[in-house]
Length: 360
Picture 1 (cartoon, one colour):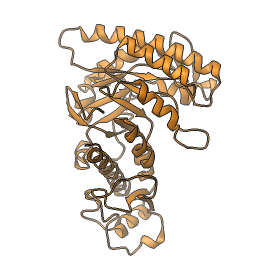
Picture 2 (cartoon, one colour; picture 1 turned 180 degrees about the horizontal axis):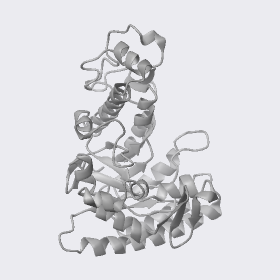
Picture 3 (cartoon, one colour; picture 1 turned 60 degrees about the vertical axis):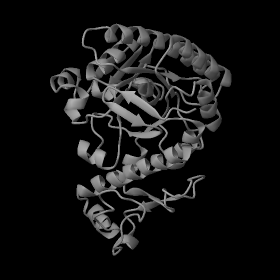
């Protein structure tokens, strides 16, 4: 049976759940009270970006991620593994990769990230759920690269586990969970090998590793399903980087329990809002015809006196008209991206509420 609740030192998360990316310690345009108002349960931050800005000594001086951001609910931290893919694997000028770790070269600065350092930083920041550093690939990378990635990911996971246990054994260490990432590209045998090796090491949860879309932008459903089948149902499985509403719904029905992506918040800041075509409290949301995009730039919204969505109870839809939000967007007023982000995140939490009811 799929896991329905995840317990952490900063509270429980009802599953499945969408976790917005607060990459640098903030979900852009929103504060902690805003996030709670749209039913967000947890936030994901990124150690690669945090180590650069505001930096480790500053985060610790400000009391750790929870106190610094005013967010008292669960926080997970990405390890920097995705940046191995998005930076180093895309362009050698951004760094290099060895079995010891990753060296990033950004704007004349050099950052070294080993499995041990990634865990040390995440632990020092006070995260509730930490990710092992992994070697992330694209599904279309060569078999040779996928093999190297799996071998390296397993070796790094062992080192992360050892360092995590050392830190957790220290006096007054806050209880935390360590999650490993299953790599293997589009090779079922490699996926199985990676998952079985990580399960043998032992972790409190797992993530789907690698870019989750193919070259045509479609969800790599077969690999996602295989990975879910390889991980026991009583362990959380995070669909890293999956944020398109239809993809989230599809992966949740496979048994994935956690989702994160910049897509809903980035779309919001660019004026692309998500709206239900049907009441999410009364309909099962299958396929892609249950929601639509509303573009704030469209002139047709100028005199619309109704909310963005009749099915949304976010602070914006409860108070303001679509016409007014359109007006703010045209003005480039700071309220516009805030309102849009509040709305899109409430859309995502309504979707998750629908999926939780469906699974019960």
